[in-house]
Length: 207
Image 1 (cartoon, rainbow, N blue to C red):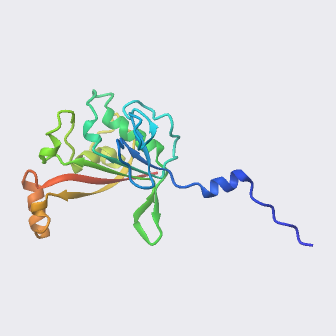
Image 2 (cartoon, rainbow, N blue to C red; image 1 turned 180 degrees about the vertical axis):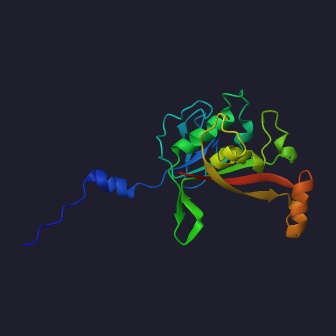
Image 3 (tube, rainbow, N blue to C red; image 1 turned 90 degrees about the vertical axis):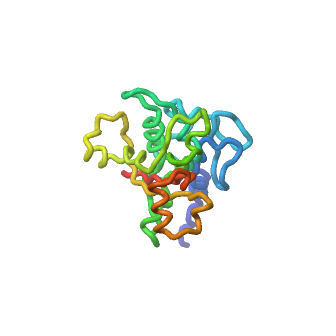
């Protein structure tokens, strides 16, 4: 008689069924479907109580998280000094816990693992300045410093940051500009305050 195939052990079966780990950082009272919430306060949406300005984020191991989303938090990160800036520490930690990037086989430009989506008020919007607890104004150029090659090209390797991300971005345009032509929108984004309310950035972990 042919040998009876062995059944998978319980541990192997559990790993096979394990869902991707997706984290919503600074989730507050809301997290997207399919995400685990992380916040300094234990809300109904927070699955993990973590101070995101204390490093490392102890619950999360290296290369353990599939996807991260973080909305309206980065602008609250306080300034440090030239050798110890929480902005860089935050993104170094985000880089540490993300898995290496993987892409959709049908579209190699779309990441399915190892990426983060960051949403912030745009620097030229009053939303960036109206909240007294905001510390930073964020633009697309802010994320150049998270790319290793860009730091090397611009002789900024002495900056206290180690992460290496590729990134892309898009704008949440103010309602009065949404139905205008692409050319008109592009001009407004470059030249007018309050043309953009938020910027949304996708960071992709480089190996």
